[in-house]
Length: 102
Image (cartoon, rainbow, N blue to C red):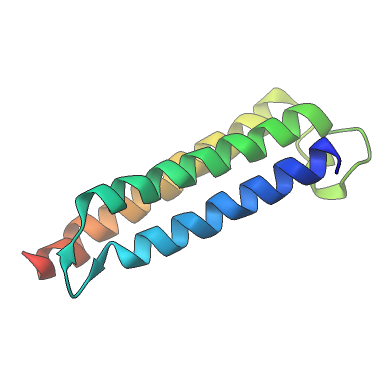
């Protein structure tokens, strides 16, 4: 397996874990703070893995999508997107979801 494939699979696994952990952080047992933190952590790890993929493979014709991120400025947009996504999810959960479980 190539480094590209390994990083892509890891990023996908961490993102799927993020979604599962986020949705299972709230349920019959109420709000589970530790699981909620891990959901954000897995999102950040997925973002760093995608950033690493672009840093290693952008402009090398490995993937047309990664080739778009051929400068550090464009690559840093990935990390910025992860921060915005994380803050958006946190804001929605904090003000709309968590109050229902308190």
